[in-house]
Image: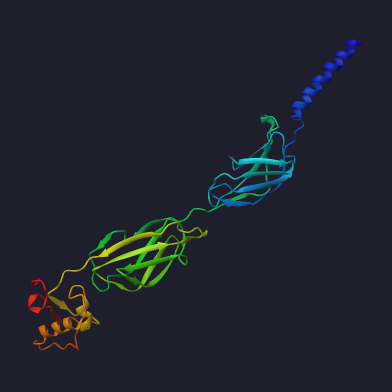
Length: 299
């Protein structure tokens, strides 16, 4: 009789051991049914809640986002898990999986959460290049009064030209204009031409990328349009008037009446000179020096 009892006990123990190994200690795999939120910044750290059944309160769970382990995992109940999403790549949707630690590692079942998690862009744009470049000196141009009327700023990603501002100044004067563009580049077009002999300073502020991330700090740069050499003779261009000629950087850089009169006096003896009827190609003498009231000797 005792022998049969011993055999029965041994059989029972073996059965229990096999049963425990087979069902992993009766710890079933998790059954995820939902997740909120389903998106978050690429930098990670989004607090995610996974709902479902049979989450392992005693031993905990493992949660992965495309193979990357989640952080700060908590199992407050068999029907809820909270965790922080790891960092990812903006624009990607990843698969989230969960498994119970109480199951033997070789038998652990990873269950897929029904929803995917989408990583959103959280990185602000950065300026990569400008045209003209910072501290550039422009010395070659055809017309000192119409050197250029636009400049461009290129970013490391697509931006919205309708956000932020592009502020352009020369000395204490603001240069009015409009910023437009698409893709990675914004173009500022001035209402009037930029002229030689001036330094232009640009401040780019609060420009946003397509995800709404704004430039973190203003980007500043400046460039110089080199003043031309002073001329002794000037050839009339289309649309020129005496005040316009006097104001040119290579002439006097000032439209004051005294400079206009100086041009008249120096050229009045020529038969074809009429200050009110200048013609294209006409060559004018540009007098300068102490004899004409300048403080410096003739150049």
